[in-house]
Length: 436
Image 1 (tube, rainbow, N blue to C red):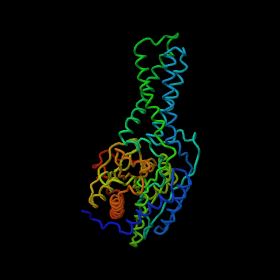
Image 2: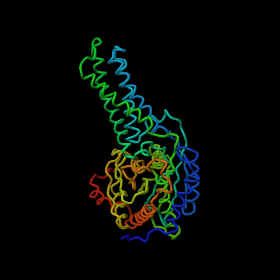
Image 3: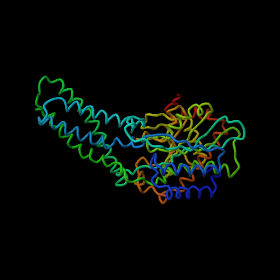
Image 4: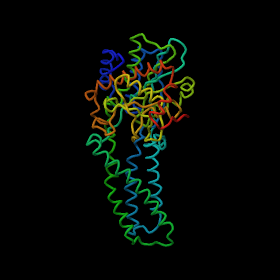
């Protein structure tokens, strides 16, 4: 049974109608686009109704880098197979193609690990530079600021994932598994091949069955490398109603509820941060955390970053992200957990998953943050597809998520900060707190 009173009906309507308005009037909000920046400017105007200060900051990025390496990596996989067969069939009788292949596949593998799994910049400078922006709104306390809680969403929308639309996980799993597994296999094999080619005194025909079997396995991988070329539909930018306007409007709803109830905490500043270019690898959150690191650490700051608030049964706490390579805060996770319990839902900690939310951008710079999402890790056909529309939202999930956020702000202020949640957070999540 929910212990909080919950948000008003006017705020609940405002969130749903606001998401629909953005989808209708600010289409194609890909990272670094004019539409994304216009949407942020509009949302800044909305926040000025309830916040004491609203800041809008531009930042540079190379948005195509995060996913733009995928087609070249698929082509590299195909070339590697061709290079091997040219050598195996004695068209080329030296180690040159083996060495070239190793260099290319190691580059592709580095893109996979650094850009896609770790969400770090690696080949960004090779792609066109664009401008995105972040919007930060603050509702100040009545007295001295001693602590700060930030609710975060992102305004940009993703390019469509072809196989998410056509089959969901049944299509995504074989294409991603086959291409990623194939790239790893070819990398290992090409290293063996290069060593063999370089250490053989004279050209030695590849006569053993081993070389033939390896060549056949590589031929089997070619369909996966071809399929990954079409992983992203660069012509379609989704509406992003769930991912992630739901989080934007929930974060805005916190300030709206406080303003309309004339509520201020004595020493806790409550903020709404709408980042840009999350779909380009958390670039907005990273830009904000890097630029404001000193400010965010001088006064205790916690960040609750939301993403795709669609399914109540999938509301989970993300204490780690970037495919398990970045630890988030167990203490903020405990704050969110207790807020959920007070609203009638016991949320679990998510397992390691292949993705990230803006929380990890803050954790990277030593800011205490946690992810809060309502998305199925068995991706449904609305995830990153043209079906992510206002007609495919869950008002119940959005309303409950807002109530949890309001309760989290109340708990955080009432307990005088995050310290009272730290020990219980260690126990509950059992992975240790990574203090930087």
